[in-house]
Length: 157
Image (cartoon, rainbow, N blue to C red):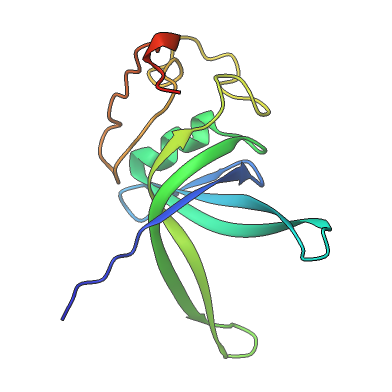
C-alpha cells in the first residue's frame, strides 16, 4: 500500500490578530490563526470576480510564539503545514461536528519588515525581525534564512 501525503502551502492575509494561549500542564503554546485566501478570476462572459476562502490554522510551540509576536491582522504570510480534522459532539444537540484546519509546520513573512498593519511594536533588533523570512519546523528553533542581496546581473530574466 502506498503511503499518503498531507502537505498544504497557503499564502494569504491574517483575518485577525493571532490568539496565543498555553495548554496542558507544561504550558505549551498554541496559536489560533485565521487566514483569508483571495482568488481573482474572469467568468466566461468576461465579468471579473473575486472569491475569498477563509481557513483556520493552528501553530504550536516556538512557531506559535514567533507568529504571535511578529504577525498582526491584515499581514500577508505564507504557511506550510498539514490538514487535520477535528471532531467533537455538539454540547446542545449531541450531534457529531467536525472542522478541517491547517496545522502549521513553518511560515514565511511575505512583505517587508513593518508593512501590512503593524509588526514588532517598537521591538529593536529582534532575533527574527531583521530577516526577510523565518522558517520554523514544529517546535524546533527557527532555521536561519540569511538572504544575500541579489544583484540585477544575477537575475536570469
